[in-house]
Length: 212
Image: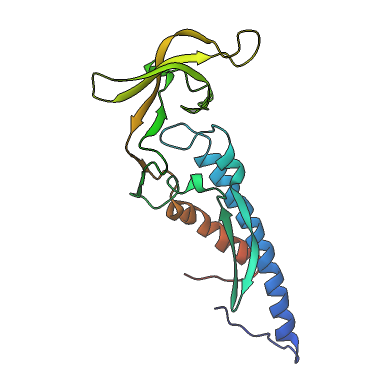
């Protein structure tokens, strides 16, 4: 809570200053939320993977937006929203580990990277199609030397006279997993530590002293 008085003022000046302070605080919160959001998108959502979040579809980065300033009894707030459920396992305190399990299937199907001979992911690391999407044909499951269950198959031609036919050689497509564990890579406490001195400086420049 901020307390103060108007030196040499007349009745009604305190209320006037209070309204001006609220207006100024809203401007600062809006500007700082925009700044913090830009910082998150540029520093944490532009790679390199796997240390930071890279861009695949761009859904998470485009869904990361500043919150509008909202008032409540005795205060106001703003911040950043990540706007998609995809953010949940990736954004959290240091040490957070989220376990992902299949909901309507027995297995998770994880695309195999090109590094291991996979053909499912594009150069931008976007999947060309899910295991049952119709993109793959002549599929079968075999166990790798490391004991993993792998879906192998060929690409299916999607257009033209040969639509529906398979092409190329048999290659590994997906690895089957009962669950995967994902460590958070964007930590709110680190972001807030970056933002706090900037917020304090912005209020001080407006003539408001913040503590804490």
